[in-house]
Length: 392
Ligand code: ATP
Ligand code: MG
Image 1 (spheres, protein in one colour):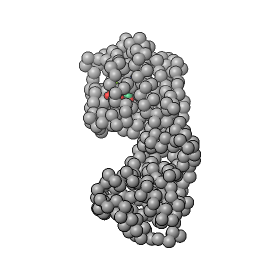
Image 2: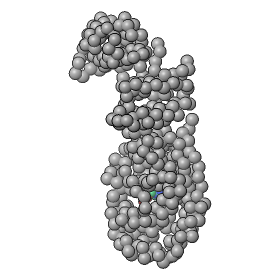
Image 3: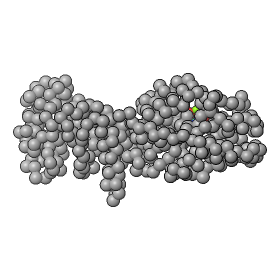
């Protein structure tokens, strides 16, 4: 029996005149994600994208797994395509849903008829198909309120579509529909989650990571690249910027008061990140900061970091508890990598007693003790760029 996938738009469906632009981006993203699985063709109608396999032996289970991670899809279904004749729909339902109905105790039939030429009304289809399935699966009972299985028939322009399972999609907006931002990606738990959350709002993510060899190891950098790879099923291709940060950290250690070390380091990270963002047409920065989690994430500390920022800084996990962030990182599959025990440059030279209530003017004064500009320019200049693609 011929099967296709129907993906239902999420929020895109609410967009007025721009809707087709959003749908174009969504289809492009789906096409890329499904390419390794085989050849598909795409069409759309009524807030639904029709995804039709063009090769014989396409693994639709694999296609469904991939679709679950594409932002912009509210839900999708794997459906049987049937001729628009009731006898064919009836027999098709029995055959296609045989195992599902055998295992169920209760069911109901739901019909949607967008093709008004079809001779039966929706209530008639529901009644007739329900009666037929009851006669074929006598153990079943009808339960219209909380059935084990809802058999849905959609009579649309080209054909009738039949399914019993609606699979929740990733929601959100298609990546690439909301502009570009640069994610400050450490090896920790929070920043990959922050990137995932902003990608869900349609932002295309690039990642920037600061390394301080020999204080931080190559494995620590590799870990962050792995985190990028783990984000690609959701975010698509990620440009990875790796900034050599050793000289700057050594200069801070040498020239600034120890208690302000972290806050000055974070201001310099932000400065470098936004220069790279500006150079590459990215409109915002993203961090994994959460209020009060560590000394550099108090409100006062954030005032001091934000003071150097000319572009918006998004902190999507700002109001979340660690446990909530961990739950998302486990769901999206970055947790196991995040907890690998390699040093981040933040932990190198980290002061014993960081100031939790730094004053902006004092921080600015301390930072002004040394001219960081040449080192900043050098770090930007020597930043390595690498494209990390989904692992096809
Ligand atoms: P995470 O779990 O994301 O590492 P964290 O709780 O460990 O966060 P910090 O180490 O204070 O917090 O870092 C706060 C934020 O600064 C991170 O979420 C990340 O966005 C950014 N950041 C920290 N270290 C780096 C780094 N080496 N490279 C790039 N960004 C970093
Ligand atoms: Mg960290």
